[in-house]
Length: 90
Image 1 (cartoon, rainbow, N blue to C red):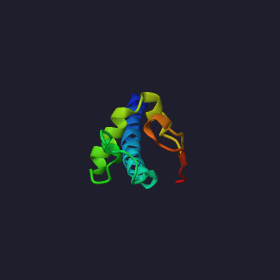
Image 2: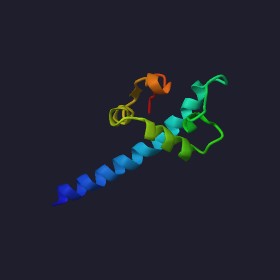
Image 3: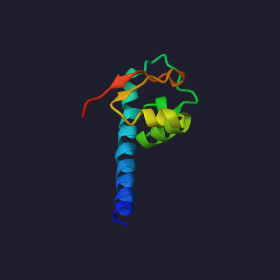
Image 4: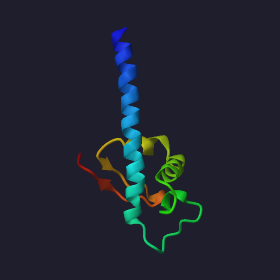
């Protein structure tokens, strides 16, 4: 019984730990964007949109496998979305 409580609690903590990282990662991608890049129809590339709107738009475009790949420190490129490879240390 204690194991189940721990797993539920640790799963929730993991989820709430990942979401802020994804929000900050979506915002960090703004550094890779150029003025020539098209933001039409891609709210996540629009620096005037809120971080929450941008993160929600980006996450809605990503597959489950792509979202899982963002859980580590080595983030693979997602070419179809124009997301470059990056690595962070924490």
